[in-house]
Image (cartoon, rainbow, N blue to C red; front, side, top):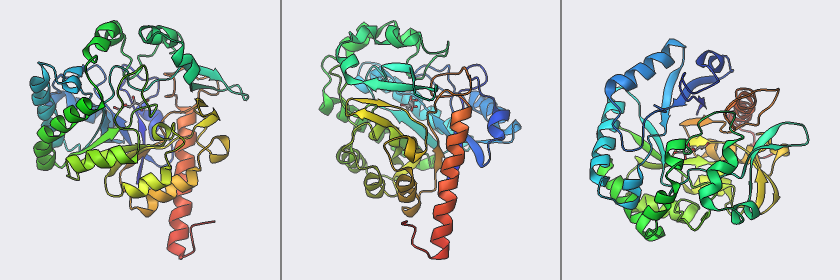
Length: 362
Ligand code: DNO
């Protein structure tokens, strides 16, 4: 396991590589070329420049999150094959620069969905939150407007204003796409890219749909153990794997997170580990990472990763906004640093207990 932090690049992030370097135990970053549009080619020079920037700060690139998938690929539109050709060349360029992990998602229209970006918790911290009744009352085309005022001026991943300006057309593009069609298009894409993934040993790690159910009537296909297993079987190659995101799968309380990790053994290439606090099944907020602050047993999640031999990067994922920090919601420095330290502490304890031969179950 390697502890990492997400980094959006110097033009977009309020957190610097120098700050990340000072978080104990964090050796790598998960990053991206944030200005790239889905479907666009990433050149080798652009990738190398990013790599040099990261390495100059004493860190390395542990993986890319995300090389985004265009809507043409998701709906099977006329530009699909051109975009896939660009994706393949991008993967080849990443491989040549010795980058072997790519996180992506296959969510229609909206990437992750939250109804509040700054819900105030009793301790005065602010967090991202989701309320189903608020979603049900909202016109999907107004979704972006309703949350963008709380973004601290940041461009949020998957919520780029240029894309959101065309949200009506985006919904029209998906009018005939049901879950089966979307799944077929995912399999088509995966089959096309597997040869280059094998050639350069690039592990693809699909991010779950967040929340793990259909929002605004749009299809969602990566939401539980059954449909991930189906996806892995449809393209049965170790390079076709998953990002295990506890905060996304965990939105559905029926998903037993440690059990899912065990069922996906060998195919989890990347993990986002964070906690959620449920106030009711339709209302949750992103709590601190600590088990006692939320609903999940973080020790059991880390133990399942440890016991299945997980050796990829973990990132603490979203954090609360604390200590007066102003940053992209979920992506401040302070609480993610606390999260990284806590998760590293759990891992150390699990590892030491395993090596002592003592049972790791308390
Ligand atoms: C939100 C993130 C997602 C994730 C993408 C992966 O904070 O977890 O935007 O990066 O879905 O492609």
